[in-house]
Length: 493
Ligand code: B12
Image (cartoon, rainbow, N blue to C red; front, side, top):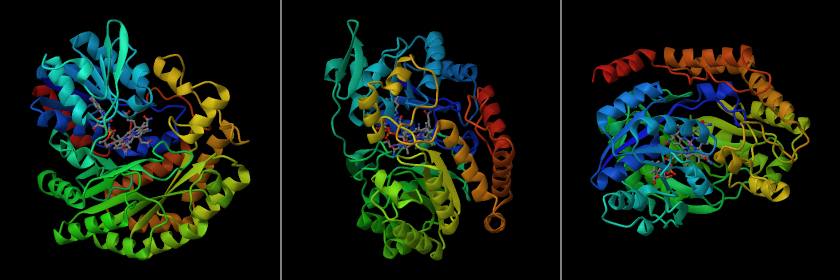
């Protein structure tokens, strides 16, 4: 079979947790989920292409031209809950033109499998991982198996939507993502220092139970240190990658595994810098190993400067732990980023002030103030659905709901106040003279300076007062020249 995977651009949403300007400058990331699907399908003997229309800034028509050239038998898309409608628009257009089956997968399928494929343009849905499902589905489409035997599939038969439950997978068994199908030199994120840049995932799941997170209490499924470093080495050798952001929910969850990975990176002498996400309850021994292995940034889930709020969201950390870990991180020469929530359960103006004050005291290199949201599968969402009897996200997937800011019954702050406070926190944090001087001195290239300076100006002068729809939204691209080159090649190929 010939499979074409399309990663479509997505617009800013009013219901988003980030402010528009933050979303715009976030970065250009590789469509990693699709790269996993591609390598799994290839391993099973199929031909695959990935069209990263978001990064290449391709229109629907341009993607259609490329698809006509590739001549796929089946089209595939990755679905998140929030961008479902954008992707559905692309599916509608391409399906109408190409008239071939469409398969979707991605996180949203875990939450709303049947609703997701209820749209007539979508034929199949992979509920969880592609590892067993995709090879089996393709074999069924080739007439070698029956659809009812394909594990983890949701499909249509005799006018009915049928669901075959998924099987557990061993993440260790996944092949490396097919980065050879991606324009690796176009990717970057806001704090990137080196090129080429990529993202990696080395473990699935998280055993903690934070109230705002959908990954809470899901089975921890790590890849072995050797496999992780083999993938890093492949990135280094084959794709000239020199910076990696590890997107695991909590990369330091298993201290021994993390230390083994660090030691293996050092042993292989890979001149690579990397970033990861971590809880703050880790120790100096681990931080030292990470710093020696090239870790240059750690993104910490700090969430709040109020102990009461931390307890309300079941974070299981103390403000003292935060201070100690951030100080140790910085002393070891790594940059520290803090993720904060605005509008968490019990939040008021005073606790937001405490959060901003705490962030300033920590003097973090980067901060992100996200608006707390009842995301599907989170405890906050479960509570909201139970109390109101209404599931906004389900209706959104079914096309019955518009994009809107959702109620936050757990705080007395209004949505407008939360928008305003998030914006105020960003401006106040970044406008300190000491921060501006320090940040400028740490900048390593003109490109990095330009990106950060433009982002700062936009944050100051063109942020909307409250979040609103933005139909003309385009994500920031720091490589317009190279992008044009790729687009030209695409045209003449
Ligand atoms: C890397 C990443 C990104 C990258 C790349 C996205 C991509 N398409 O690969 C970037 C930064 C671009 C990104 C963007 C966004 N992301 Co993201 N992302 C991730 C992250 C950290 C890792 C994905 C990954 O590789 N996981 C490991 C692989 C093995 O698992 P997987 O992704 O689930 O993929 C498997 C299956 O789902 C399935 N599958 C997935 N897609 C497809 C497609 C087909 C055709 C098939 C057959 C199967 C299939 O097979 C895969 C292999 O087994 C996850 C969190 C996580 N740790 O998983 C969030 C996550 C998926 N992202 C999320 C969100 C919200 C977003 C954004 C909306 C954020 C934003 N505001 O911009 C956008 C939307 C992008 C879009 N087009 O919809 C949410 C989704 C929640 C939800 N309910 O839908 C997650 C779970 C993070 C979170 N905790 O909030 N993301």
